[in-house]
Length: 339
Image: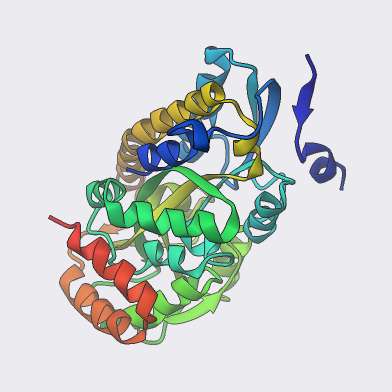
């Protein structure tokens, strides 16, 4: 048998699941064009091997597929080895990378509506996030994404809520006045900054530690596992638990999906399902260890009396006025799935 190594050479050298599986494998008309065979799939992401996105996400997918022994191998490339977010999205569309783990906001570069998943206070918590992806509204959003880009979404998880850090506590919107807050360089996150009342400064995640250390920015926002991954406790004094947004990850796959046999598709989908099931528990465990460590050594003061209601009221009013019609409908669908 020959092994297909899709895209890797060029790059190195130079209820979602049920809905999408049914559309791909639900009958004779929908059988994939490919006949399977031995296939090596590249799975890229931007996280370290210590983060739950890799340990309980990407690595679980690779291990589960390997144990099924159906002629598919998933090779994982962490820490942006195959390019930064924007480059990897384009590579999945072109077929140079097979699979990727991406935030919804970044995916907005190729399909704007999906970025709404990262809107401020769209989700109340991790359970709300998971519940939304069992709805028909989520299935329709991801089908639109597939129709527009040719990219299939096999699953999605959140790696915790996003919180503010700074060298002073942030308890209410007024506390952001005068602070230069780093936000990711994407339209949705920059809109979030406006909605929350922050003065946004765009800095790459890889450059964030240095920017905080040198005072280029005064604070930032990220989930706890990402804050810890780049040691921001060394350059920030306070973690303010604003919980102003979920940190989305979508597991996406390009044209290689149609080259897999029905059995191979089922195995890969089951592997992603297992990762989706495992990541939230890993994130919760990691978050607790990180918070306990910061409290014990005093590296970061935990501000747990943030007026989340004030931030949420301000953000929702802004988003309802500024999201376009399609995004607003998606946002309202997300809010309707809250309990």
